[in-house]
Length: 123
Image (cartoon, rainbow, N blue to C red; front, side, top):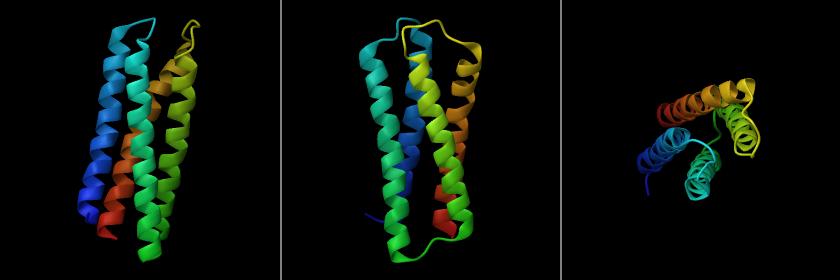
């Protein structure tokens, strides 16, 4: 599989993660466990795919500093999205700061992943 196909696959997984999260947010509480599980699996699959792609490309040729900065920013946003999403999935009242973080962090994660992939493709 060439790098373009792998990059498109990563973008599709990132988009699917966002869309499944939006769908999940429209379902209300209690959160449907099957849909929550699907959302988590898609999100983790996208992250794993992007990490694997970065490692594979780094083995072929060392990655530049810009790619590493973008990848680290993406990873920080991804961890924030996971942590805030985990807090929201508990059977507790939703706290506004956690909700706001989870509304912002996935968008930043998608943006960071997209920038990382772009730099990987052009660099």
